[in-house]
Length: 425
Image (tube, rainbow, N blue to C red):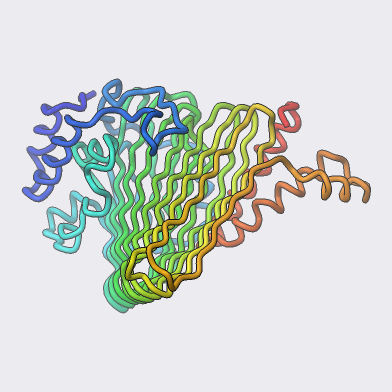
């Protein structure tokens, strides 16, 4: 297993083209300067990291997981299928778009990839971003040509299997002018293996383009994940985004959406459910730059046992972003006395001619509807299950790919019923 050091950078550079080496050099320069975040920093104030990147080596390719993939099964027929296994990518199956890997794309001189790779997430955001730029060695690349509509979804199955290691999955998406595509990225790893996964997702939606992008995270019990996702949205373009968070010891998701084009629009809907000692941390920036842009955010989650959730959301509206419409909502259920949900929605409005709103709630299941259902003959356990189902359904029914609601509903129900049977809720 290779250390995260200069020798490893040089080994990776030996087979990389010049433009990759330049990106890697910038990343490693920042990686050497930056330190692990602490709770004294505003961006990490609610999270106590229990690991250091220096304690993990760069993952070598392991064996694919043998467990069935419920996400792929739910999606059915695909436009293309890719796998990123411990950072090593394979992709194929599409006749309507370029769906390839970094190695294949670079070798073929794919200028579409070369022009955008690594430009979405800034190298200096934190040590995790810097490490990703320094040590990423493969990627999945989706490029949809102008005017092309791809009806079926693409699927990227991200697997981490190497205990004691860190991997850097990378996905780059370009949807050209007046093109349309749908892509789901699933994350998984085995239980009991202590590892770090540090993915980056960068998407560029050109003018009048349309993208449906969802992530489905169900990492194993000892996986620490730090995911950076950035989407740039052009004039009259639309991004419909979904997030499902279920797994991992730590699940951190940094979401950065740039509505730069006039008339661009973003919908973000998400659902998460934490249990035992999980920490699920969502940090959102919805950045309105262009005129007449709009966004709508809905994130709903539950925590039980001693799990903790964090939502820190900022809707920022720039001086020239007149006629912006932006709404941000976070709803949280706390199902056990030892669990905690932190919700901090924010607005930063630098322009007068806007319509904005934000809100959040944190609390247990409402006793009034529980009492009503029990008065109609339901047991408290059954009534609670119905309320949990209804709470999440508002988000799940709005996921960009409706098929994802099937495994998500099953996972939520299974988690809550198991906790009931074990007397944890």
